[in-house]
Length: 127
Image (cartoon, rainbow, N blue to C red; front, side, top):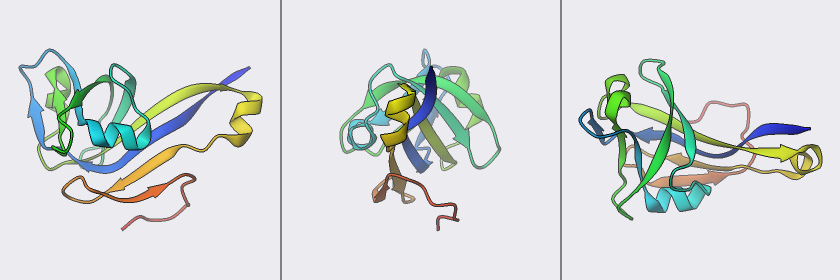
């Protein structure tokens, strides 16, 4: 049996752009992708902390070091620049792999710099 487990997370990313006229997807700075093990074309869930919207889309890598978090296409209707979002990737693991799995979680500041890397998340409020 396989379980779908969180593999990577960008926590409290700040949306830098919402581009309605783009074909679709989310553009994310390549440095941020590398930090949490996310890949080009990978499906991700995006949760908007400002309005509660949740969506799924796929990743387009952005310019390395740009701090870009841009929702494109129809997803641009669900966010505004400066909204705080959580971007989550998942992977399927068999039962044995699940017992030793540790996701990569990056906590971001208001300018999308990584301020902390975590594996297991505490049940706590992050400031």
